[in-house]
Image (cartoon, rainbow, N blue to C red; front, side):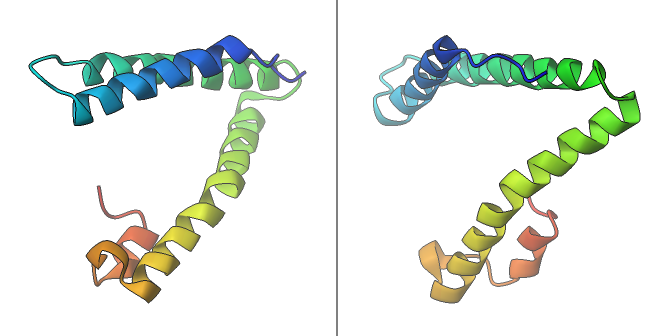
Length: 108
């Protein structure tokens, strides 16, 4: 069973992103960004936990973890490597010359 879509979480995500952007662009002694990051991490933790719990209903723990990480890799890897390719090829924003460091997840 797939977790139910909750549109309210999109609203909370938007608020968390707004708080971070407000600190970056309109910081006059207010520190909104930390609250936004914390809220985003709480939402992410809730979503990841609900996905893993739904997998655990039908799969073993090891199979649930494999399925979770495989789905994440298939979702995140293509745009990640496309970004590395574009930054390296077109020298966008003076990308780091050793592109392989990012490709192997060796950078922070």
